[in-house]
Image 1 (tube, rainbow, N blue to C red):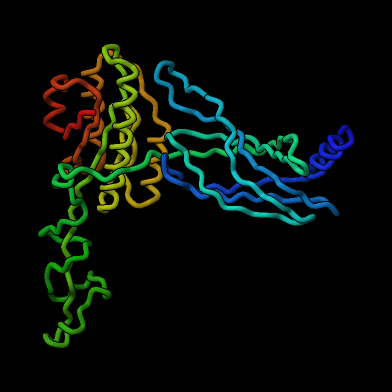
Image 2: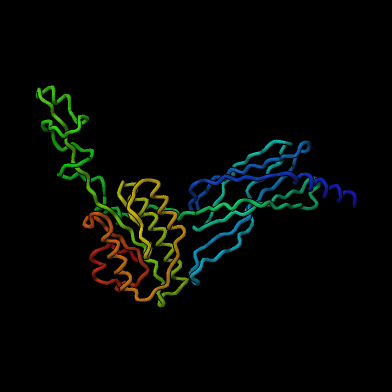
Length: 334
């Protein structure tokens, strides 16, 4: 029996020796959504293969703190990444798995753990490997916006104006002038009229949308109730940002006192989702004055403030919003 245990220990130790692990995560990961992770196990031994290797990920999860001002780090349980039965010598085995991160936040992967029950299955032998710190940001998952928000007159960038500009819709045909771009010449119309004719396009609506998330945690709000409502607000903000960017609007995201720039496209969307993934509530007093200040600053941002449409998401009680904020924003109570 002792000799059998010794052979089991020696074989497992040799099987775990000279192994390296790499894991490739997707560029963008959403909370509660399956993400494909590619795990590669490389065996650098000259002669011997490795058998029955379980690969696990070790790391920490940074969750926004609601009671303390600083963020709280919580140790994650080891996460199984894959099970590889056989790795030849001087070769690598690759496996694709689906991993789900349940909540938004920041994951720091700082190591892996290899284990095996080879050859007899009596004991599990383990070996820990350090890794370069890999930062993974888990975005809040956008959802479909409600019909009420779809009815808002916010089809920015798609409404044809009756003034000249650089849009896509034809406004009129006119005679060629010296300053006109030659690419706008309509050759068919020129042939019919026997003089140079150019196409003039209508400008597009330049309406912009600013989404303001109220991050204030006042003393009269229960922290557990606020946490649930605040997370709901983050999900709604992510849904609104995605909805209006899909509508080709210019969107700015304001998180408390932190202002964001206007932008459109996928790069801007992922930048906003990253900010939402890491946002924290802030304790503050003087709630009405601070909210007015935030809305006033958001409304005045951009070169044309008159085209800036504001949507405010807040955990404040109904009836506590100042009248001038009501007049300037569309308020969504969380």
